[in-house]
Amino acid sequence: MSERQAIQFPLVELHTEAELLRTLIRRTAVEMDELAAHGEPAVSIGHRVSMCNYRANRLVCDAADRAMQVHGGMGYSRHLPFEHIYRHHRRYRITEGAEEIQMRRVAGQLFGFLR
Image 1 (cartoon, rainbow, N blue to C red):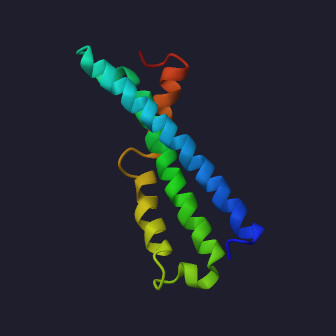
Image 2 (cartoon, rainbow, N blue to C red; image 1 turned 180 degrees about the vertical axis):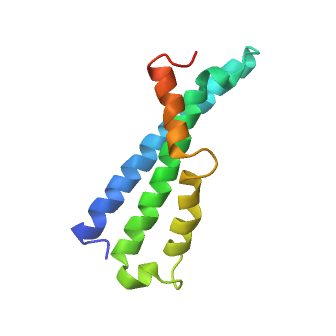
């Protein structure tokens, strides 16, 4: 199936998004380490952690959704793991700091509402 463009293109998009997210996560981790080395609280980059959380939750739901779509009716059944992965990770977009809360933290930093 991987020789078909209908399969390749969504996987390339997801792979690219995952790589971008990994870069953001690593950059955030480095900054947290640097702050800790200087004895400073990491709260000053909380907005970056929120960006990581927001995009990671979105990415896993997008990946599971595309997997279900590619596999058709079987993708939504309980015979393949995609339905469970989607259902399980979809809740993190609501709980554990809803997307809107994560976005509010980023907007607060971006537009100076939070200091």
